[in-house]
Length: 595
Image (cartoon, rainbow, N blue to C red; front, top):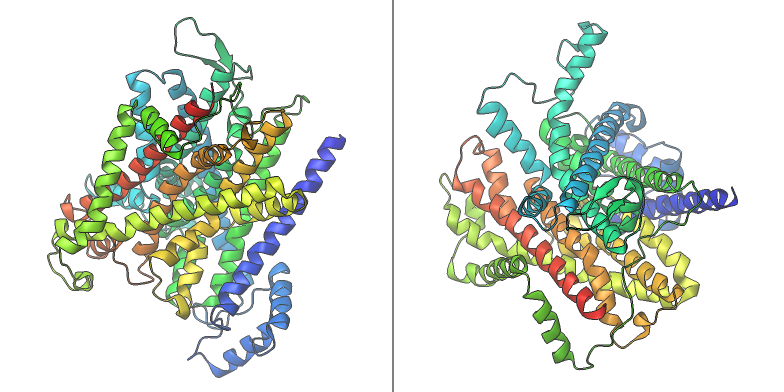
């Protein structure tokens, strides 16, 4: 009982701190980066004066901050300056919130359930061809944008086969005249395709997490509750409880739950579901900052309380009182000190890495994409601005030149988030006085919704056309948090178990190994996030996303053409190859430093 009270108090503090961080970040974006942009020019004079008075934008920043915090925490979001022209946002936004919450609840639950089932089944056949093929397919689904999955369902399935299925909206026009059963069926028909799109985009990622957690439990020979038989001859059956599997990789699970919310927003936009995703887009293109800051805050609340519900589920699943293996545990025995020579260490890593054929294939693909990103724009001279006016663009030329921005954004995001995550994790580990504060901060940043955050920054006039480094920095602001958590937790667990490996000269390699377990997910998520950001055309893009956006806006997706197939394949190959390279590098480091 006492443990339950402590858990609840800790989570309530985490929620309150996360809300504080979210509101502070939002205030900085809309007030500090370029002044009070929430009062756009050209609006009605009376509405302008009322907005200035309501939000105290002519007062010092300190006064503005407290006014902003008070209004947002009390749910008084002010009056719209663009979409609804003076109408109250708080009363107008209710239906949007309900639709997004319903879609997120159904899609997230089914994605986690199906992902857990697929991950468990694949772990049973890990050494067989079917298991490897299914695992690769799961990674493929994870690497495809939810937006692209949605438009492929719309154009390549429903339209091509002329299916009689509602594509857009939440209800039919005659919904009000239907009886109760007809309304349920009408809602189910409209919700089916958006839910399928989110499941396809998210279930693969959850399956990958469950697969790794299950294999870890089987390797440690830890009995838990789902009967999972291992595939090797003579191996025993290891029952594994779902909560134990997800808890093994808790930072990954939390990151993916927040990412599932982003997929819901993208799918909502694609199917015109009438939720917060479409409202976020509408307020962005009309620069209605009053509506957008309300949408941003509500989306963040959905993420925060979803993570809280997930933590409570994990806690209640261990109500038997046994101490479950946490995400900090790693199967390990005695530490083996490696050579102090950096060259010898790299040679050892390469020796272990090249043992895997799939790792070598992924490395070749990743390097080929890197060479294309560096050399392609030099060899293929192309004006991306002409794409907006082209009647018949050259798909190969745009594919070759468009890979540069995508490649370097993903690479820099993984690099910066890894470095920042490792540094913060080590500081939290060594400087115990900052440990709790830094972990609360990481927990709060983990719950920041990625797509709305980048939308908010891009909306401001100061960052109207961000570059590669800026976009990667914005992504890293969110992605460093789970890396810091797992780096700190695993090292702390090792020290509490009286193991000395993290105190050795090779500790940096061990921290890197821990960071890569999350970094491979960061690589795929950043590639997909950049695609959706460019599809919205909020700024001038120069990447594969620009080509896909051009094809979408010019009705090119109903046809099977290289114009959109090539950039989609490039995005998928980049995400999959980067993931596999980091995965096999993580395995190589594990084999070198553990016996």
